[in-house]
Amino acid sequence: MRENCYKRVREDRSHLLWNMRLPPQANKDQSLNHKVSVPPPVLFFWLQEFMKSTFQDIVTDELRKINDSSMNIYYGTATTGPRTDDELWEYDGLQAAYQGECEEILLEMQRIFYEDIKKEPTRREPEVCIQTLEDEYLARAVYENMQLKDEQVPKEVWCPICKHGELRETCTLIHCTLCGLELSRGNEVTLDLLKTRLAEAHTEHLERGCRLRPKFCVKTRFYLTALYIECQGCSTFEVVI
Figure (cartoon, rainbow, N blue to C red):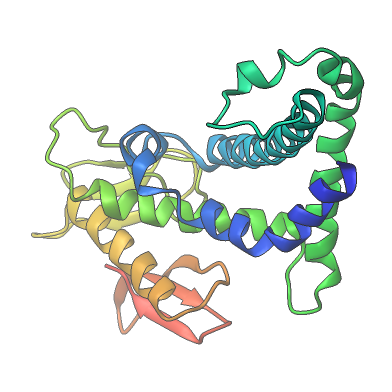
């Protein structure tokens, strides 16, 4: 069972990364709306829980295969119909045989997942990869949240520079509550417009196929101060607002 679990982690690593980057549409109402209202550290915790749940599903599936095989041998006939996870553990001896190993197997699966990423020369380090996944998830969450018409959807906009402070607007400025980001509002610049432009900038960058993490900065050029998105990987350097 151990080897089967480890093999599936290696074979399904790319699929797992993709699911972490683009959460299933079925979870949209439960995940996207909620995640938009929290900072990246909480999203990182969500990614860890998602990965742990996926590994647990693999272990459960392998245990089910062992259970089905044992039941077939015991009764001498093939079992029919799917069994629930509760029914899986009703088979005497199965839980006692593997319960002590499950936690160890899950930890080893996580180690293999990160180790395989580090072995690929074209891959970034796991910490950078996870950080990028956070940013991509944030971008998609913000973008899809814009399509909702629910007035109760949280209005928070997180700072694109420090990613921890919240953007606030006054009569003359849009500023971050933590870092020194300040943007002049002008006649038409509002927090809602900035939110829209940030979502569009993230989406356009992802659609170029670049998976490096873009940065945001404020620069003054030709006496005009603006917020820019830049990425060295795809040579992106564009005005956001």
